[in-house]
Image 1 (cartoon, rainbow, N blue to C red):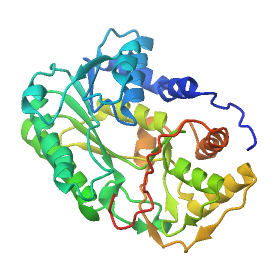
Image 2 (image 1 turned 135 degrees about the horizontal axis):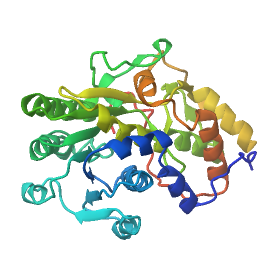
Image 3 (image 1 turned 135 degrees about the vertical axis):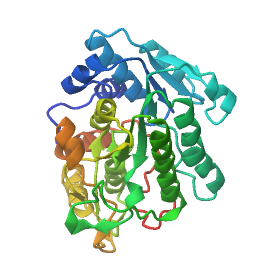
Length: 346
């Protein structure tokens, strides 16, 4: 068993409470936000707790606003769980123009729909979800503010020594998934410029909680005695709640042309050192294979930190939480991030 962190996360209910707990800064920002919030793609890994966080932030701010979650809701029980949290739900296929047109007019849109895993071998649907759908949404909600989730994969690999790609760096996507994500950004940018829609493009790299994420992938390998490939030798990780809080706060700074923000943790983490730390916490040896490449998929998050403050959960605490969760047999999503992929194939 690893050393117990000061505030062990007890179970899924405790985890989801923490993942949806709004920061003081978010509550203040939501007190100033005009209009309701609608989350498109609310059933993904981050959507449910983001929607719940928005609901809690409005409640704490004393604002009688709606939070609406839209998805196909294929996971049993998720729609009713969101309803129980005070999030109004709408089951819809966003790629169906008729169903998209029937959604309510809402002042603030969070766009979280997209496709990554399974994109290799299913490229047509990947481009439909990541490029065609953003164009439809940008036109349908041209009079709304839009926070659109994207990815740091649009930058491609950058030298580790430079500390990660900046928002001003040229884009160099590798593989069809990353290229389609550039397409997503270009659709929102185009319609923002044409229609004056205020947009915030947040390039995420990478959100982590205790059931999935890069840290969970690495912890499981160490716990199970599997070797760790060092080729992708560094990464960013941010507690999912910190990522969601910053994304929601970016409504206030959305602009035309779009605001662009790297949504990343404040540290560049070494795969080798993190795995060694997991090994110490687990009391297990760590096996490595290969060696670190001089570049990796890294984003510099200083701009978002300057706007909204540093993440409330530092990497060291998150590593302890993950180690404790994995060692206790906590529930896992079993959806590897494939962060180590250097060829852009997911």
